[in-house]
Each structure stands twice: as C-alpha cells, then as structure tokens.
Length: 139
Length: 462
Image (cartoon, rainbow over all chains, first blue to last red; front, top):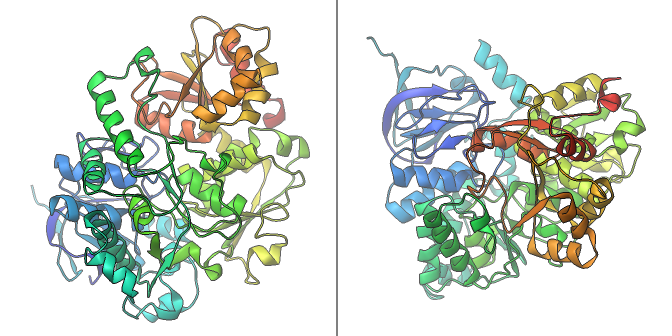
C-alpha cells in the first residue's frame, strides 16, 4: 500500500487498529503506553511499540504533549497511521525530533487502504510512505 | 467489511488528504481543509523576515519556534505563512518531564511572545494546592512550567476560558489558540479565526507571530459541512442548561472533524450555554467550528452558514437522539456520590451568580465534596459581588488556575463524581478512573445536599 509520508521514518510492529478517532489526553497513559479512554474500542490495549492506526485525533489539544511524554518515556507507538494529515500527531512527531531526535514515523493512507488494516497483523512502515502487511503472526 | 462500514459512517463523504487531484475539489473535511486549495502543490514561500527568523537572526528561541512553524506549514501544504495578532497557550498544562524540558528550553533561549498572549490552566492552584492530594514533587515541576511560560511575557490568566477575559478576541481577528474548548468558542461564537492548535505549537506561533496560512484562517474553509436540524425539541428543553452539553456531546460524535450547523433553535442561548456546547463537542469530537443559524456571527441564515453550498449530510436531532446522548454522559450506576464538581470550562461570574441562589441557605451533605473550578479573575469578581459567600456557606470550595483533570488534586478515594459539564463527564473516566453522573446545575446542588445522586428527569424523559 502506498501512503503519504507525513513524517518519514521506518518502523515495524504489530498493528493496533480502530476506526474511532482518539484523544491521547485522557486516552493514553504515557507511563505504560495503555489506551485508557474507556469509551474507545481499543481501551485497555497497549500501543507502546505497536503501529497505531486511527483515522485522526479527537478532542483535547494536550494530545501532543502526552505523545511527546510517551516518546521521552519510551512508551510511544512505533509509528502512527492515519487517514489524511493529522496536525496533532504531526506536531508531536516534529517536536520529538527537535527535542530528542526521535520523530515518530507518520503515514496517511487512503481510506480504502486504511480499511484493510486489522489489529494483530504485522506491518512495516517505510520511509517513502509504503505500508507492507506481513499478515498475522503465526504462533 | 465492518471496519470499512464504520469508517464510512464516521467520515461521510470524506475526501482523502492523499496526494491526488481529489484534494483540490473543495470537499472541505479536516484533512483537505488544511491544504490551501489554490496552491497545495506550491512550495512554501517564506518572506525575508520569516527566513531571518529561521536563520537565527532573531535569536535562538525564535529560530527553534520558526523551525517548527515552517515544518508544520510544509506538512499542511501551505504556500505561505500569515500574521496573527493574539495567542492562547495550552502548553502550560504540566503533563511530565518532556513538556517541562520543552518550556524551559524555550525560556532559557530567551523566548518572548510577540503578540498579546493568554495562558491556559496550569497543573497547579498556586496558592491552595496543599489543601489537596497534589504530590509536592509534581507541584514543584508544574510550578516551574508556570514560571517558564510566564517568563515569556504572556499574561498569567491561567484559564481555559480566555474568551471570558478582557483579552477576548474580536470578530475576524487572526489568532493562534490552543485548548479545544477555547478554539471552538473563539471560532464559532466570536468569529475570530484559529486553527486547532495543539500544545507545543501554540507557543511557537506566539513567539513568531506567524502561522501556516491554511484551514480555518481562510474564509472558504469556514462553511458548514453537515446540518443538524432540531426536530420537536420543546423550547423548555432548549432553555435548560443541560441541553447544551448534551447537544455538544452529540454534535462532536456526529460531526467528528467536520463543521456542524445547527438549525431550528428557537431560544437565544447565553454565552455560558454556548461555552458548554462547544466544550462538549470538542471532547467527544474534533469540532473546531460550529454554526447556529440565527445565533452565531457567521450564520445569519442557513445559506450563509453553508456559504451557499449544500449540506453533505443532514440529520434530525430528536428528543430520542438527545436522550441517548445524555445517557452516554453518565458512566456511574447507582446513587452513591463522593463529589460534585462544576466549572469545565472555568466557571464565569454569571455562573457563580446563577449558583448562588440555588445553594443559599442550604448545606452540602458532609459526605460529599462540592468543588467549583474557575479562574483567579472570575473568583475575585464573584467574591466582590457577594456570590462567593453563598457557595462557601454551603460548604463548597473553589480551585483556581487549574482543574481536576489537569492537576492530580483528588484523593484516590474519590471515585464517584457528578457534574453538569460534558467535558468533565467525558474525560473523568479515563483521566481519573472515576465513574461520573451527568446532571443539570440544580441536580448537582440537590444531590450534594441529599448526599446521593438525584436527577429531575421530567424535562428529558417525558
């Protein structure tokens, strides 16, 4: 799948996917990387080191500050996939780059490509915005 | 299939922000709004002054801020930057070490805001935090963050309702505001123009006085997307305070990141009712601008609200839909209650005035804490006008500069909250691990007196 690299970078990890937008403030515990919005379908899942796919952020403008804390604490997602440019994720990634030289790779996928993603699949996000799906990991 | 269906349901006629020609057709959803249609392929053009800032000729803090502004402009596909004449900084909320390092780095580089700038809530009631459960190390860090932002020359308003200060922006003014509820109020109710600026970016805009010329700064991106028609909602409900947070919660869920237009309102809402509406919609959704036909300044008519375009989607807001939205704001079951909390966004003088007669001559049950969160300025005005005394006699407390979501002030045994705020109701379960009951202001007072949740369902369930 060819996406648009919003903040380029390479990452590989297990996908955590929801069609529901997410606020990181009140929705993400940067101490643990857990999604804590109790009204969100991913509530209780750990996003640290995973490839998080949500269409866009919702709610609080403090989302960026929480994501920056997660980068510093090592509990941020390995990469984030959205539909379209999400300014909150983009800003957090840029500041993570300015402060800690650790930008979070961000890719925007077309709606129909985003819709093929499934939680638990292993994804590779490439520098040029390609997203490769390695399928469900065999146990 | 199910996922596709859900996304389509959420996004409606979502046109993707992909690098295709589709993005230029004028389907103004959020991602496309952020690309300037006229020149989304053009490279970012910086003025001589922009380049001087970027090169460090205006000092290292300006260089760092402009570097972030210019990178964001490129991501948005902006062809140029534009001037702003006001800012509101949400980055003041202490979250942890990274945000503090960012603030102190800018401050140590000599950062100064270049436009009149207000400050959002901090992580601390500077003078009363010791009355609560705030850990002292946390308080020290939060205080350092307050000092860092104050040192940049911003006005220490410490409020999430900066539109209720003397620094309220005017119609058409270009500003860079953070804080989701303040953004939606400034755009919708005042007709000022701000994008949805996140923490850490708002301060960069304030330092450079420049923002990417995209999104809600531009007239053609401010027309409505979806129409929400009130259908059979009685005036008595429309006049009730609890109608606005409920409608806001619903609006956020339905609109997500699009611009909703409400039609059919037959009463004239107060400023505080519009504040509650916006805060609800910016919690459950990503709403940065709404219009109410005949009420908000860019919507004198339905046609004006949609800038002559047709709504992409229309929904009827019935009592049934509203009842369901109201129920969603409550997560607690049962009548047990530990605390009533009011004031998200921060309580205004008018709200103190409204509360005073409801609590006059009564006492809160000793088993229930009763808290109002507000700004220093409003609390002082409430004191001077005599409305604070009634609240104190009732057994209520006021916290300023912050709120229960931004400061770890509540002791862990407080797990059952009641509020009239959709924003408190939305975030408390995740941020405080507390269960919440939503009710009207009168319900909240009565419940505090009786020591258990009591709600007047007459207006809603009949």
